[in-house]
Image (cartoon, rainbow, N blue to C red):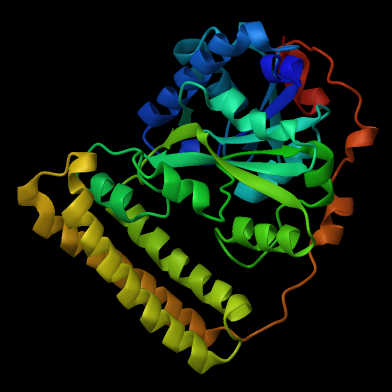
Length: 361
């Protein structure tokens, strides 16, 4: 057991390039530099160089853009790991991650967002719980970065906890796809579900594996700093989609009856508005929120939750209840099963297109 704790096992780190298209490039650069630094710190403990797989929508991204960013921002990354670039035909966030794990040959797969910066100790912290052979998944500790009034408000009221709230985070039954790890074979048998929701796949996935008796854990020793939302218009859109997602969650977790969902929306709006106000007033100093900005922060928080409430009401009024589909058989529909994949061979970038992926050793 001691040897396992000191030596990190072979891993694949899956990084989607979807978030990088939305946030300011400086946050993606921070994430790359932080990952490079963390792998450098852990290089002496790695049993073999980790495999980092960048997954991107080939209809929106040119591979050379990712390569050029790495070359400029984190040039040592290519020496610390095996870099691989995997184009996909129009896949989005969760589907990109499923697609990547299906191509993973290592025992463990790690999911990290392109705009999430690992903090010192992140990698060993995320892998340590797997010393228990019954643990199938590990969720890390993600906090939201901030650099202005809007991002400070969201750091206080968003779904992520603050740095100081380690114990609250440890107790939360929640896993986020931006910072987590899995036993690869287990995840390939239980991928993120394909749901008519924008960001609720993690919660439905977690509820399903718990119901079937599989064990997972949350660790606060694997922290990342996630980029803030890129501006007010983006945030308003996220509030609306979050409202639709909340109604979808209520429909399958509270009641399929429309009246109950409307009542749940009102209760959630009141609860979150009051909680946000309390956090802004009592914890604003933790994100360097000036006292004189508190009134504006309260208005922004109320506006966010009101747009979310409107989305939830719209969903409750327009969406009909449908039984939740059994999404587990989707694992057999992934393009490749792990046992059918030979270890990736190193190829030069100029040959990458014909291979469907590029690898750098």
